[in-house]
Amino acid sequence: MNLIYKTGVTIILFVFTNFLAIAQDFPPWDVPEAATKVQNPVPSNKESLEAGKAFYNTVCKACHGEKGRGDGLIKSANLTTEKFLQQTDGAIFWKMNAGRGQMLSFKASPPEQIWSVINYVRNLSVKKEVIAKRNAIVQLAINKQGDYKEVTAKVLEISKDNQQIPLENIKVNFFAKRYFGNLPVAIEEPHMTNQNGETSVIFPDGIIGDENGMLAVVASFDDMDFNPAEATEQVKWGVENPNNYWTERRALWKNNDYVPVWLLLAFGGGALTVWGFIIYVMLQIRKIKLIGDKLKK
Ligand code: HEC
Image 1 (tube, helix red, strand yellow):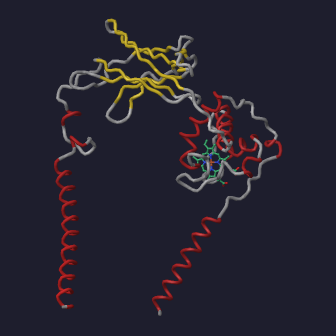
Image 2 (cartoon, protein in one colour):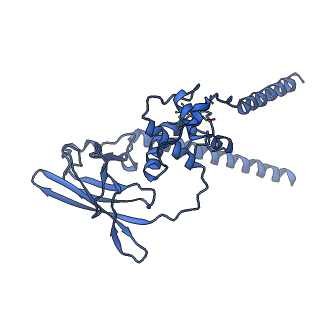
Image 3 (cartoon, protein in one colour):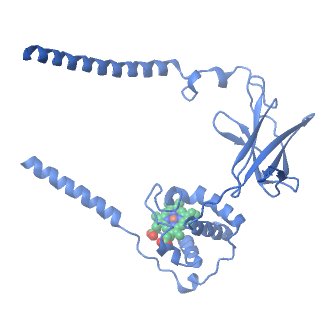
């Protein structure tokens, strides 16, 4: 009886505290009248939305969640509700400057960046008809003369009648392929395609390749209107990697062929033990059934 009583109380307390935590909402903000009247000077165009998205994903997403529903790592404000959207851009700007509690103050960030992220946040909850993205491809041309290593990417739209049309003003990213993800190359300035759809970078020296100095060069683009695409080209531009350290040695983080032996053994042993136990139990159950059958007779 005592135990049932205690368990009951525990469960009720548990449910109640959770309920309190969930129901706890943030108090309203006290935004000065004048601040709510400030107009957003940055038009909500593609450039601003892309800048806002980049800022949002690096800074805000952790707390506010991918889609702004306040479901990130900590409980934060939902930026997609009717109530949130009813306020002016000026009010949001003021709150982002002021900050409160765990909501940081972004006073130190450039104002255009704040206005752009506001444009992006408003865009999060716009019900989008599924916009069919257009298709484009990247081509890579490698050009080496002496010490001069140039990579040119050309972005071409594939039109409905299968024509290839050069795309101007598309941002291309260049990488060297690594074991883990890609290493960005020449990121000091954005590489935008010209009217021929082309943009070039000088490839840096000193990037480690495989034992023969081979490297994979990657060019890709990330544009809201197009499906993503990338192109890869093997070049012998890397620093030779004489002792094959990164390719031959077994290590914890390697792929299947190079996992350490002890890990293989430990994992295999564990799996065998579990299976052995399951089979043992099944044999025991069969034994019980056989004895039962015997007794029935
Ligand atoms: C460390 C976590 C964290 C980060 C990072 C963060 N926020 Fe917040 N944000 C919060 C929390 C928590 C609240 C609720 C604060 C309150 O109301 O007391 C909030 C509230 C807000 C509000 C006010 C919501 C309302 O009710 O009007 C806006 C707007 C906002 N955040 C936008 C942003 C944007 C945009 C970014 C990125 C530039 C960002 N936040 C980054 C945690 C965060």
